[in-house]
Image: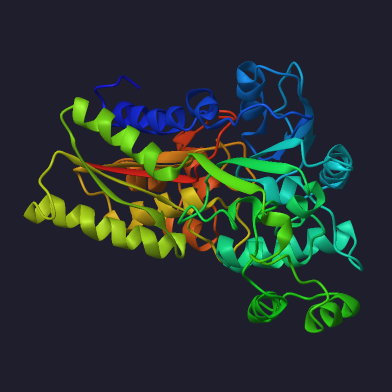
Length: 421
């Protein structure tokens, strides 16, 4: 894809967004001073490897520790052990990683420092089931949440109350040591308590909130666990808990900073950017219809801005799974966008996850252009039927329009760019 082509420009915008979220660029500026005692590093997420490497390179004193990332993304780190576990549904490695981290911080004193490296995906990678729950229970609940259409805040509220490490419990395990959390945000609003289910952050939600979410989406629980939630026995540490007295939290990369980096590339190419927001949520197909309407308005009326321009947005859409396709919220968005645009001759688009994995596929997302629907029909593929079957990956894969980047080792959530020429 040459950079002067629409597809080439869209890919350059995506690459700029991903590059802006790399820990090597930003982590060192947030490091605290070395303590009188030990420095222990722990962490979880899709960016765990690159965050650990950046910390290892910048830290001037002794340190040790362990972090966990997604299977297939481990890279060597000189002084910090890197483990692997499953995402988006946890596995036995997720449980083992949680146990290792709790062991690493056990027995620390007031002169010690814990640096916690958190990024998107940590909820699945760091798992210690609450009393009465098995790993199989957690896996079943996680799968049901992922298919339910619940947003990330709702999913993580449930995860926190069914965990012995999330929702601030990891901070409690570190006390009385000082805890400095360095995080890359992958959630709308950059809320620390939601990122990776906030293992070092006080939780304002309640067991009652978790139960309401489970009931709303008709997700079953073992009877003993439901009873424990109803009795408030699985409550998370709250903001006034003394365990948070020596905790601090810094965001080293966010979706908005990545969108701003993409906007700068667009301006340099002579294309006016408009950032619609970094926290867009809702059903992917419905969000796509809104984006399509804005693109059509620009093409027809020059409002809210004149072409050539590019609409940029981030956040995390959801998909209520009704079909049997291969899924992916970004390709669901893009397929719905293509259907809504119906081959509009002036609109090209890209939608992808900045971690390089859209859903459970090792595919970041895809691109579409004015010929997308016609090319699909020429292959005997019905775009609306593919959308109804939640088969965005199958649709764009058949056209050769899938965007495959491999793991990007960071994660600032969804990235969407719609170019109107």
